[in-house]
Each structure stands twice: as structure tokens, then as C-alpha cells.
Amino acid sequence: VNNNIRLFTLGVGTSTGSKIRTSAGYKKDNNGNEVVTKLESNSLQEIADDTDGNYFEINEKNNDTERLINTLNSIEGEVRDVRQVDVKSNKYLYFLITAIGLMVIDFIFPIKLIRI
Image (tube, rainbow, N blue to C red; front, side, top):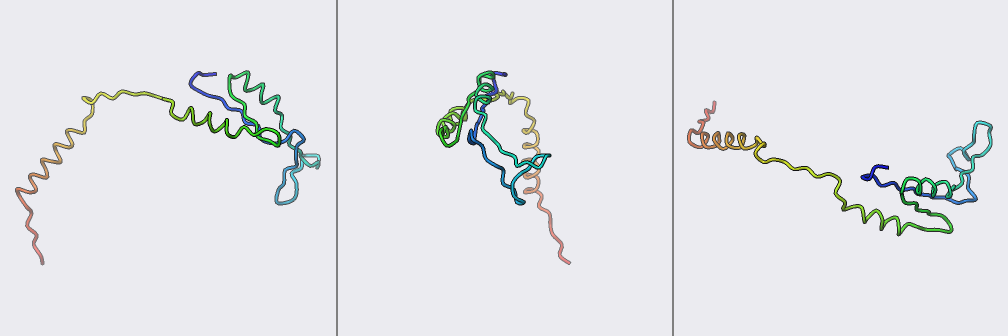
């Protein structure tokens, strides 16, 4: 795993599982059987361990919401990328001087309006 990337594994659900409700009833597989989703916390924990990530579980027994929020808040201020810009390479000064020069010329030589 790249040291600049943090991996989070989040398990939400129950180990007993539940059916997936749709507008037409419950979700069915290709054989017509109702689909039951189950939380495979051991597999998710292994993925987090193998990738040096963090595992958070939210279900009827565990609620790692606060730990998840604290972990996210702790990385929020991390520096992702640092760039240095050489001010000498900025060309905005030429445009600024040209704009100021045109404004001075406009004040010195006002344009007379002719109304018809």
C-alpha cells in the first residue's frame, strides 16, 4: 500500500443478514431466490490487516462510528502536496502595468460622447 494512501474498511450490517427491499418486493437472484446480505466481518478485518488499514464495524453489537469520525478528523489536516511557486516566473505584473497605463491614458484623454 502506498504510504500516502490510507485504507478504511467499513462493515455495516448484521451477521445474520437481511433481505434487500426494492420497490417490487425483495431483490432476487438469477434462480428466483430472495437475496440475503450478511456482514462478513472476518473477511473485512483480514483485508484491513493485510493492507495496514483500519476496520470499523457498525451493527447491532458494535458501533465504531465515534472511532471512525475521530480517525477521519485526525487525517483531515494532513499535508497532501506541497508546491513552491517562484514569484519571478509570474507574468501578471506585465498585464497589471499595461492596465494601469491604459487607465492613466483614459483619464488624460477623455473620450467625448456625441449624442444624436
